[in-house]
Length: 453
Image (cartoon, rainbow, N blue to C red; front, top):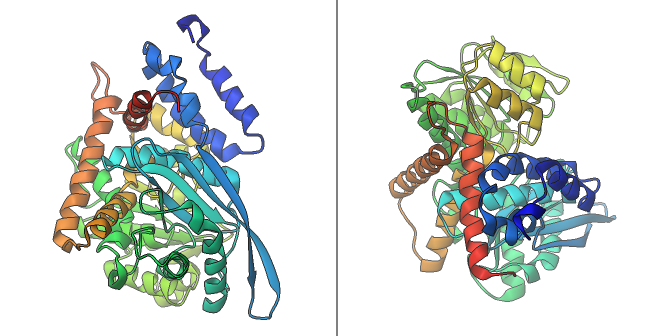
């Protein structure tokens, strides 16, 4: 393609929309990246000639399959499963499996697209993928979950492998589900390989994997604050979610001297003006992981706390820093304006694309410290990558070694964002732009080396 034939950004996005009808989440993710990438590649003919962005925005393959299973009442149930293998230019496909009623092809394509750049930012050799099903493990017995996971893996196993595609957990997929799926993979293939991460410590898992995403998002927040001569001591933090990422983000905020005011789930959020201390975080972990209860129960246990129901989100609570750690598009443009109005000056995304496009623009225009998920929540997949290395070498690293590696990786990602997100004559860092360009450049340069494939 000659330089004169370059399409402009609106035309490119229109093409993505036309090729992916009814997939708003995927189009949103591509748009958010393309807005920054277009300026960067403007004078770089090789990226245009070889249609690099166009190729990254077209998954290598999307695998869809039927999953049949039997519930405890003897009824035959039918779900749909997917694996989206977006790009393996720098390593095997790597990304989680999500079990939730909201799962669609669009959601998984956006997650796999984001994962491609996130994995590149870690500096580890991992491509981008994502998978899942519209199966809802909530309210199901362990036997039902086991039967579903076994049926799901019976279809998925032929598309994955330690050097091909290495899934992990995500929303609705924790240690229990990983165990059932790994057991079925091992049963079918007669192989014990590192084909899934997030495994139990007794059978190939890595220390700090559970904590890594929430801890990493907090470490990245700390690095941003350092650029302004600040730390977390004495700062009020609003956190959404109450699962693995949110509770470990809260844990690390407490350890670094901050005060956590909120947690949430799909029914609403709790606000504790006295602070959600480590003892309270531990109680929430017990509630969610073992009793599988609702966050509203918190106010019965801890007096002085308030529960705001009806699916309310915590963004109206005044704070210094915010960490959206629940799910995609949970924070919109109006929420972003309200956070800034109420004094929030730093946001670190623990979830994948939790801020919608209008919210991203609000944060960027206000020039607050804003870390996109592909940078801030990369700690989870980073430790998954380290788990892959441990599995391949048949070794297990100590916790202190892994903690150091996690901090080093998050500091490295921050450094890359600063390198590509800064601008001459200004001390402001556009972390969204920095993450998008740094991740894109690594993947794009690998793709150029391979030719047209």
